[in-house]
Image 1 (cartoon, one colour):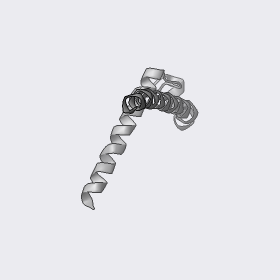
Image 2 (cartoon, rainbow, N blue to C red):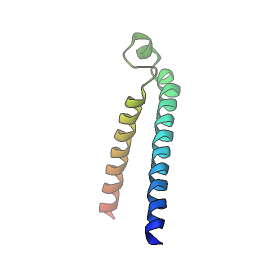
Image 3 (cartoon, rainbow, N blue to C red):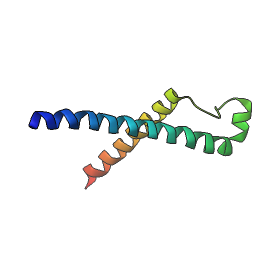
Length: 80
């Protein structure tokens, strides 16, 4: 019985993580396309900043944001 439980739980968790990653990448791409051209219109027109980013770039931005959030959270816990 416990073996059957794990055989159902592990794929379910992996599917949930995959869906969360795809949703996060979609949010990063959407927020980039929505905010960056408004914040830096001249730089986008000159081609200095991309108006839209690829899925791979969205993944890298999400990893960067997660690392920054993790570092700030780790520092906060040490001070308490």
